[in-house]
Image (tube, rainbow, N blue to C red):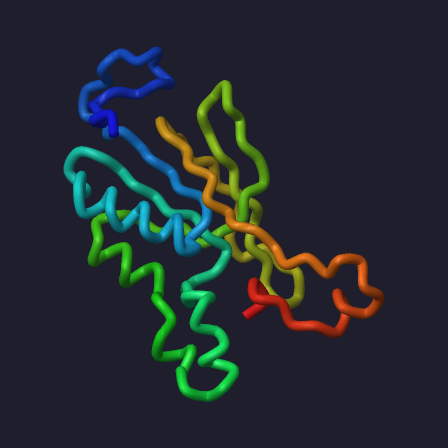
Length: 158
């Protein structure tokens, strides 16, 4: 691993006084969550600004979902809340979904968050990054079987 330095690629790699290296990880699944935990533990908040963006507020380890279905695991007790996890491990959590990435400007824009009526409760945000990690995982495949998409519950649906 190449050590991170106090610089901003947006400034052409030149040192920017008092500006932390910003590492943005999109996706709080198993890979993204482990990455921000390790980065936070290693670099902390003093030298780097580590941000996790996920559309959910919590993470549940998907390989344990069969135990939730069988009733031997309580998903409400075994979920990891990103907010508390972020405080413990030295990163910041931003709840949202990605709308666009501007690679030239090194920014990522999140979509506005809407309530159940469709009213905007949180507007778009533009987040600067020096390093961007896309850890969005995957989605279940219905293999084109009629009715599956409408009637099945998928792992990512929780």
